[in-house]
Image (cartoon, rainbow, N blue to C red; front, side, top):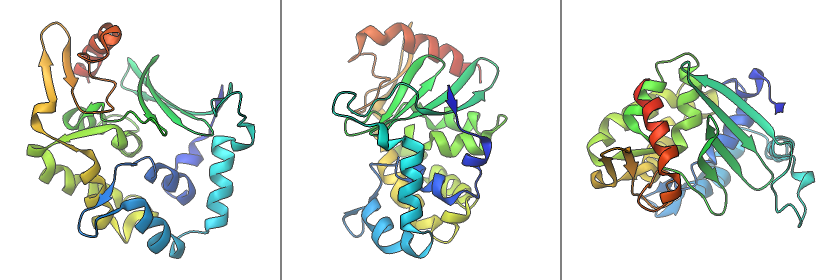
Length: 231
């Protein structure tokens, strides 16, 4: 396994965290009615980091040179980040040329790509994970996969903005970034259900936790619900 070192996801590595910011692909500036990445990439980021170095770094992390029409951007030995979540669960992130995959143990819970799948973790689950070892890093890594209900939005915004200030790259614009991120993570309260004999599911579009849509994954969702409930 091509495991990246801890220094790569250090909060001081602006290049890595700029990659992670782009995993919030549904982030949106509601006031300006424009996608967040457009504002960030064109208006804010140029003053904060070198665009050429960032492009080179993203190419290194994703091994973009290995992309071919045959493999369609999914390579055999991607750069991989692994962190424990408690004693029974491991987060694995695989960085491919055209996508990033998130796994809890062996089950894929998220995909950042043209056919993205996000909104897997509930906000209470994310906050429990944030209390564990590596919790500060895990919060930011898993935030793109969080589904935040209407009733949680105020608390979540305060938490997101406060934690964005942990990363020097985001500190100056943490409130603005937080609002745009929250827009993309927000779901109706009714999208989170607790189903007998399965546990928590998410009905939001593009969620791998939708056991009503992905019936073949019911047992995996049930197993992960058991593990997540122990955190």
